[in-house]
Structures are given as structure tokens and as C-alpha cells.
Length: 362
Image (cartoon, rainbow, N blue to C red; front, side, top):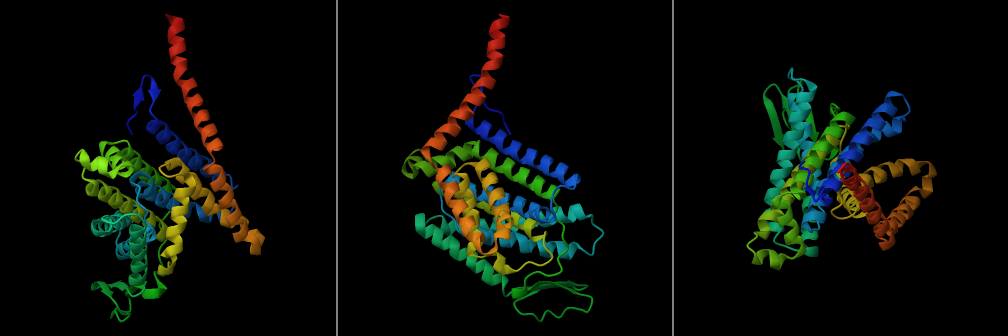
């Protein structure tokens, strides 16, 4: 991350980057210390990896919705592609003597590549649409991926990898079924850890923040703000929107790989329309284009249903009320002005201290 300083002050992009990295690092240190002291409940421990996965999904979708200005409802499709690809790759490498960390890394990279390729291929025709039409087509893509996974059967034995659209794979007795159609992936070796999730979140932040602060990122935002003006100065709008869409899909595949390797059983129905909407809620609630807002929203809304589980019948009602209240406070002009003034005054004081000390010395 490049530190941009103008007139002795940090640029807004640099401030947001510092805040985003700071939130993630501080949260990881605090949770690790509390977990080492035995103060983290088993329920919260089970939520740590999904929280990291959802943070990756929210930040990556913000690249499309907040930075590029396009509404996508098929992010769960890329997540599922990354999850099941990672499960298959991990299962194929399980018989080798490869270290667990290396096997996890290869599975995550493969999941990101497959999802990125799908994003590129889907983005070529889809990004020619705008508004509601784009949202409808991406929604259809997510449902198509889910239905395809319902008819995919894959396994591995001494003869290699088997992939068919029916359950008769002809596996040996020592063979292993990796994907079992609507039953999904079963007997998955859980490789994901909170530390691995923390590293992948940092990688996601690094990629997204650097794109935002780059020449390409400014071109993407220019296309978002005024498409006609961007085309008039020679910007290839399709190229930059496709770049954001592909990178977002690849990062979603990475988050899906982390999510998929955290459960012993994973069903295709998990990645339905509701999951795409949930990820979009993270982005909208945290603020469009606001990376650290997406991090906070994804964390809170992932933990909140478990916290409210004790209220049983009123859990979802309380969840909806909390969402409404947060939306009101988040988009209230008074709250926005207060937060902006607070941040500006905080950084302004820090920036003025060296100048004051230098003036006194002279």
C-alpha cells in the first residue's frame, strides 16, 4: 500500500486503508488473545472462519457495487464455484504427502482462478446491460451455478479423477466420492483456520485498496460517475468494468474456498439467492465504496443471528429491527456529518503536531 501524503496530510484513500487494515489486525489480535485465555465461547469459535469468508465476500462485492457502480446479485455463484473447486482439489491432493498448508493454498488459488475465469466469461455479455437488467442476469447466473452443482458427481480413485452428471462413477472400493449431486460435498477434511482467514482477508484488502488507489481504479470510478464523459475522454468503459467484475469474482472464489473447507459437509443449496442478498446487505449497510464499513457490517450481521438465537421465535424479528435501525443511523445526514467531522479533526490534529513542533524549533 502506497502512502499518499499531500501538503503534509494523508489522502482520504490512505486514511480509509489504514482504518481497514487497523480494524482487521486489532480484531485478530484481540480475538487470538481472548481465545488463548479461553474466553471465547465455542459458538463464536465456530463463527470465526465464516466471518472471515463473509468479509472477503463483502469487500469483493463492494468493488462491483460500490466502486464500479453495478448491481450484481450473483455473488453466491462465484462463492460456490470457489468452494466446490477447492473441495475437489483438496480431496484429490489428500492422498499425497503434501503439507496441509500447501494443500490449502493450492485449493484456494484454484478456487479463485475458476471463479475469476467464470467472472470474465460471464462479464463479457452481462456487463453490456445496465441497472435492473444486469441484476436479473447475474441473479440467473447464481441460480444456474447452484442447479449445475445439483447434478455434478465427482470422485477420485487409483485411476484418477472422475466427473459425470450421474451418480454412477464406477469408482473402486478404495475410491472416494468428492461431490454427490444434491447431497453436495461430504466427508470434507476441514483445512480452514482463523489464521488462514485473517491472511486471506488481508490479501483481499490489499488487492481492493490498491485497485481503488490506482490509475485503473480512478478510471473505474470515472465510468461509474459519468459513463458518457468517461467515453468522451477515451476510456474503455467495458474494459474497466470487466476488470472490476473479474477481480471481484476471483476474490469471491477465494472466500468461497475458505468457507467450503471449513465444513465437513456442504450443500449446493447453501449458495442460493438468499446468500447473494445477504452479501449485498453487508455492502449496503456498511456503505457503498466504504471498505471498513463492509468489514464491520459483515462481522456484526454474521454474529447477530447467533446472539439472538436465545430469543427463539423473536430472533428474526429482532434481526430485522436491528437492520432497519442501522440503516437509519448509517444514512442519516447528521450521523454522516458527525463521523466525517470527527475523522477530519482527528487526522488534522495528528498532521498539525509536527508542524507546530517544527515552528517552535525555528
